[in-house]
Image (cartoon, rainbow, N blue to C red; front, side, top):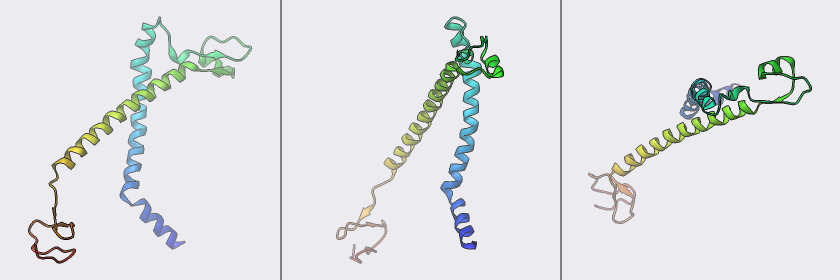
Length: 145
């Protein structure tokens, strides 16, 4: 049991696990921000442009009771297809996907620049392995340089 706990501790304290945990927490917070952006800023004007439609209240009632709003249907337990909420979720997903695309493309652009800036390492003329610039002997094949 002690060995299992030590392995688990080594796994948790590994850098990429902690980075992933931080990413999940930040992602959850970012998701809440995007959900608020969709519900409170993007969808109301879009609904107004489309004739005063409130997307969050669009639904198809599957029950025999007549209900006016989605909240009323949910309170009475009437089964519904809430396609308006689905539209909001799709728009939210597209915004999150675009934001992640922008961040990843910027990271890739910066990492390519760093790779381009790195000078070519000096190679041993005999074994073709990288050698320090001030070396007089190759550490791989011990040839005189």
